[in-house]
Image: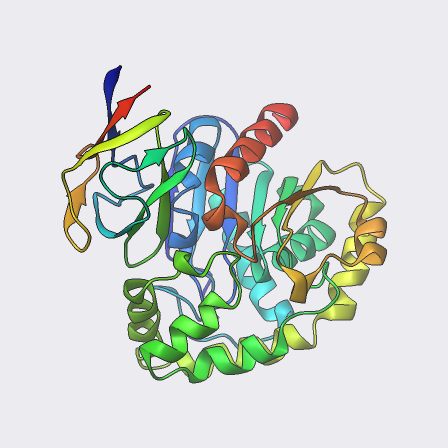
Length: 80
Length: 255
């Protein structure tokens, strides 16, 4: 078991931050690698974030409606 | 009409690439893709006339008028033929340029290109310039993507703010009318390009039903067509990882 961070990826040219629009999974829920687990929104594009590993969501660090910067850790996945 | 289109350049090596957005959008529609394209090409994403920071003088709004602006820009900006990436309206413009000015074009990468589908969405084109509320904008934009959650209130609010800039709505009305009548010209251009060896790739979203690919036009165009599952009319935004892979492969194959 290892903790794997879910990080705000590069959002493209000249986007440095985004708002967490919603979490599609909650703390404790199981996720599969590649499964969409969060929605980020910017004025120009919405983006689905995929789970980086199989496991369970251990902690959500940035709740819905808050702003995160590229590279910020949004959540921790306790990987299988 | 001025050829001084506003643009964003990314990438400082490789052949030139010109990115042409769809109706009502702007150069930022490529922001999930341009970083990837910029690794292999000197990419330039423009705001088409009537959009973004470019001139709002769209002439008669016809595809030919927009095409002349794109041609003038490419001629001035690039010293060698460019890869053209075009989405929807931008796809039709790319086909038009490849037909009229093959000397300016290295390859075509078309994303849900207008009029290579069975029809364009006349209802969308009519309603888009008239949207007045966030709810209206959300509903209309959600109608063209496979997963409605990809359109949020922020995006809808930004679209409305853009529409409310003086001059935008009249320009878009003209372009919408021009695009509605461009079908035969685009089909002819696509068939003519189809008789050439120009490298080309077409990407379509499987859920883009209202603009489903037209086998006759695409057959004449003879482009390779990749259909992406769970994707609507905005494949490059809805499914950026898959589209970026295809874009990279296209650039690497063509060179």
